[in-house]
Image 1 (tube, rainbow, N blue to C red):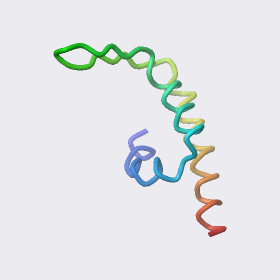
Image 2: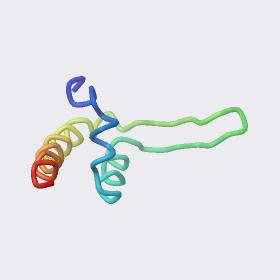
Image 3: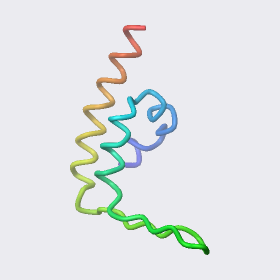
Image 4: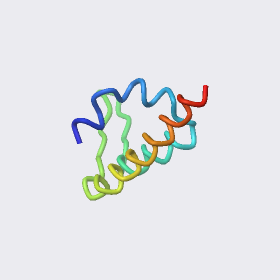
Length: 68
């Protein structure tokens, strides 16, 4: 898991908005915005799915970079 997130910023920039949205929905369950800050609940049961999604997207991003 930590390997998948080591370079998440560069990886994130290469994703299409629809892919970003899908990953966020897999990981985040609920966000509450308050005057004192933000509360966020994560989906821990979605981590296996998220890792599989990241692996697939990493392959796609690598292929996109290679075709440039």
